Length: 373
Ligand code: MN
Image (cartoon, rainbow, N blue to C red; front, side, top):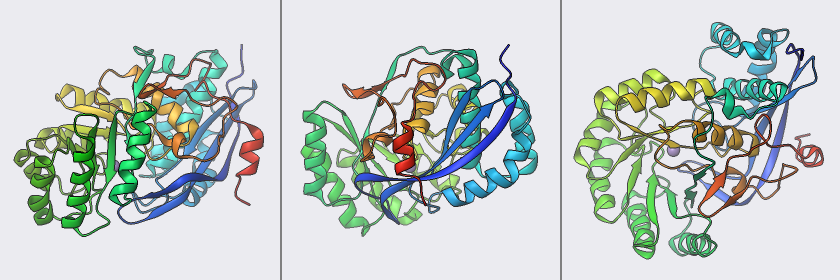
C-alpha cells in the first residue's frame, strides 16, 4: 500500500510572460505570477497546485508573496505528516489556523487532490464524483484595448475556431466612452459571436443604472459584477431592472455568499473559481447551492496557469451545475508553455486531461526558466 503521508510541501514563485498585456479596470499585466505548490508523499506521489490571482492583490487582497508566506509559515505545519486522503480533515484544520486567504488555500487543496489521485492512479475528477463530459467550451477575454485591436483579435480567434464568445473588461475608461467601445465590438461581431462584459465592481449604483440598460440594448449578452461585491442589494436592484443575465463574481467566494445571492436574486449566474472559492471541495459546495436555487454557474478563471486551469477543467467536467460555459483560457494567454504536453484547446473549447491526477505534467526546464530569482 502506497504511503500517503505528506513528507514535503514546497512553494516556488514563477513569472510567466503573456502573449500581450492583459488590462483590467485598475491594472495591466504583461506577466502573470504563479505560486507553484508541490506536495510529496512518503510513497513518492507528487501533487501540484497553483496559488494564483489575476496579476496582483487588486482583485481580492492576496498576491503570490502573501500566499507563499501563509502557506509556508502557517499551512505547511498543519499539512506535513498528515495523509493526502485526509483532505476534509486537513482543510478543517486549515480553517482553524488561517481565516480567508482562499487563493492560498486553493493552491494546497488542489495539490493534495493531485497527489492523492496520482497515488491512486486515477484522474482528479474521479475524486469529484467522476466526469460526465470530456471537455468544456471556453470564452476568450479581450481585455481593455481600443476597439480596432479588440475586433481584430476576436476575428482572428473566430477564424481559427478557437472561441465562439468573448468577454470584454470594462471600468478603466469613462463609462460613456467605455459603453460605446464595447457596443461597437458587439455590433462588429453580431450574429457570429456573443459579447459579455466584466466591470470588475468598478461602477457605483447610479453609473450602473445609467449605462447597463444601454449595454443590454446594444447587444451585450451578459453583465458581470458591475458594482462593489458586498453591495448585494444594489446588484439585486440592477438584476431586476435588466433584461439580460447578471453574473456575480466578486460577490461570491463562499457557499454562504452563493446562498445570499440566491436569496436576494442578486444574479442569474455565479462565476465559480477554484481559486477564490478556496479549492475544489468548496467550489462544489458553491455550485450545489446555486444549482439548488435555480442559478447557473460559469467556470471562471483567475488567469490560472496550466495546473490551476487543469484543476478547474476537472471541476467543470464533473459538475453539471457548471452549465453556463467557462473562461478557462489562462494558458492561452501565456507566451511560454509550462507543460511537457500542452492542454488541448480547439473547436471553441478545451479537452479534459485523461491521465492520473490533474493529467498534466510540468516541464522542469520551463519551471526552472521562469522561477523568480
Ligand atoms: Mn470577473
